[in-house]
Length: 268
Image 1 (cartoon, helix red, strand yellow):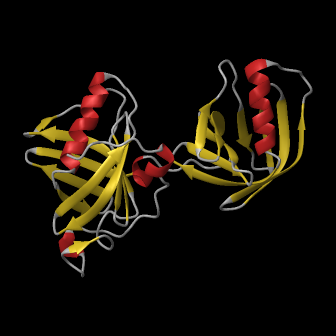
Image 2: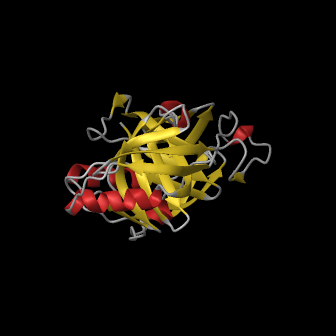
Image 3: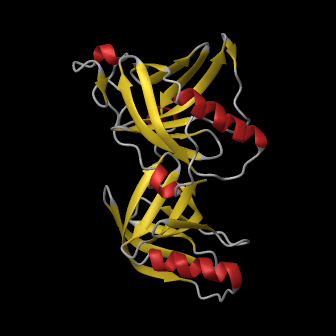
């Protein structure tokens, strides 16, 4: 396997596109042979349901799950520690992955070994079979069964979900929320958003489209906060003034202002 290179996480992971139609391997692709499109998992993201080895369950590390994302000519993978990406094509019933590189975070040893196992499997030309929302990869006596992410972990609705701020964005960088500070917001069905900036309670009027949220008439209580809560409030209020773009994937909401600053939130 080629050496794993340190790459920015933002270059490795991208939002999955809409799902493709049903298929069951390259035989369903009218183009046949090498392909990166119709009848393949391209444009979809899959989450593991089960892994077996010699017909017996092969448990993953507790709390981890395999995630595979496919774009045209590209694959992204995650198994609980580092994120990987590389070139990918579907050659008959074989998935051919080359140039696989990834982040180099230090994790628990069992997660590091799981990363190594998954990258080894992906670069060893496993066979693939797609049946609707189910993808099966097989190498030797090892079999991974995965389900389309939109089925296994559907997108949460914007409204009536409590979104908690987990990361602060600035361009291609992400930083953790200051220790001891918590911010959250909930969009109601009355064109209002209410929540906590990390320091003060607030509310605002919102206009939500398929890709943008316009905030206006924002009002907040006037408590003074220093340290982490004050820093978090400053960022939250900066992002929530004006119109932001937004994306939802499963339980993750990303708000991005025109300045490039933004927030990553999790449904809780």
